[in-house]
Length: 301
Image (cartoon, rainbow, N blue to C red; front, side, top):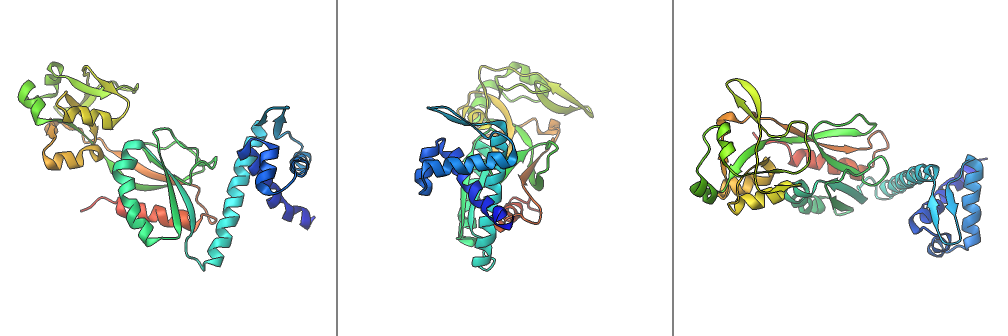
């Protein structure tokens, strides 16, 4: 019985290799085993669990829903085992790979510039960063740490607040010289407003007028699905936009963009969190990275 349990880590490694290779023969080649040996191991796992993990034909191999679940769990268990052994071998010095998922613009402008110093502090840790506006499946093992904006959905994941960001209405001096400067939110009706293209609960831009919150509809000749594009267009004098402050801090400081309608800014804030699988078995490499980001992204006085 004890030997059966001890063999399960090896079986998991074989199954993960099959899932990643998409082929029994390719997995066998990578592991230095015969295809028949790999097939027997997968069959043994299926017999023990009483479920089908793979669907095999003469040309294709795909995972069942149960196979996907088992594969995710196997990857995490094997990663935890590897992390534990490395931590002991290195006497607690964090080592290994940390996969970080971040939104494209925020990752490029905020997270990536912090990685050089982190690498100097922790030379044994390799950070693999994926910049995408798609949400990575942390529970499914697709990322170790994900940077998320706004309210978080209920989940077993642990969340660490890193900071927050607000939004500002801005335009380039060249646009304002040509089209004039809006003095009140209602004036935006006469301006080319560059907005996001994706659907939101309240279309328009929020403002605080006469001690009440209002949403003003805006329109323009260009819409985009990301803030970086809107900022680029605003810098070229195409129109007025409203984006997260992390997009425009440098451009505001340099005078390339000008803040507009600040007396009516509702000061709406959006929290930024790091989400990850926490608990006592949390790898040291993940813990030190989250601690580092929380310290470096903490708002200044």
